[in-house]
Length: 384
Image (tube, rainbow, N blue to C red; front, side, top):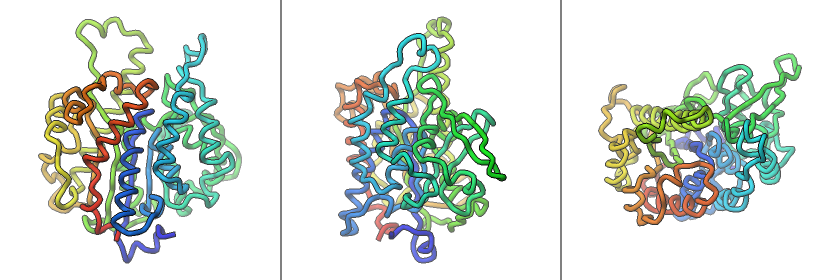
């Protein structure tokens, strides 16, 4: 396996972070296909991305992609997961069960077990690179970061947990899916029962900063060196847009309306916060891929900066940059979609992460963004 920590003294370390976002996971999935293809061409070797990246982190739908990659699946196989199973996973439950959640957990659980294996564990040795999966332990009220680093503080407790359960926990978005129960041994080996929900219900729907900290903070037991030529982090988004409520309509919102609004806005705010922080400490790739002005214009108009709209941020933390940082995402606005020659796509419809009727459109957006923004030639020095 090319990807191991012993190489850290002789080559740069490569990190990959993937946001949450339901069926919009097709957007980063298409970017992953293009990243894989371009790296194969640049290096003259066909390798899965687990052999290209030293740490892959993900939240919610990003956790599905991260674990799949770490197990050695090709990017197109993960794309096909959404195409094959998306409609089954997001098939509504019957009343009165819908009072608690919109979708049953059974189809998602079954497909995760089929793809990842029902007996594949966090520490069982099948993962081919390091992972970081984010979930929220609502029993304790804390955010948990599941990692297969054997030196990690909680690895002994978590190593026997089935991977499918961890991914299911990370993607258990409130009002969409029921919580995921997991029994975790304590330090004495006694099982403790907890319930977990989507890691996006935290500050880590975009887990970029935590992936960076996991790799570099000695507390997490990797302690990889920093520097723009030493550390690369590629961060893949699932698209974003401001969630607006027409004047006068908010007063008629019920509890479920506000719950869904709060979840979406929390994810948007978390993505923005993480992206701003990473731009403060990171440097864009030398040469930089062409910045679509529509992305910046649309982002500023909605108050949510896009990756390309953040170049105006001053160093803030000083002249030193801790890593090279590449963000790939898209604002789901009318103007932006028109600029991608996707004028037939309704931005409001693709703004819903459970829109099964938009699966083909999520894929089309992902393909357009991958073609526009994936430029691995600008990052070649990290991989050859």
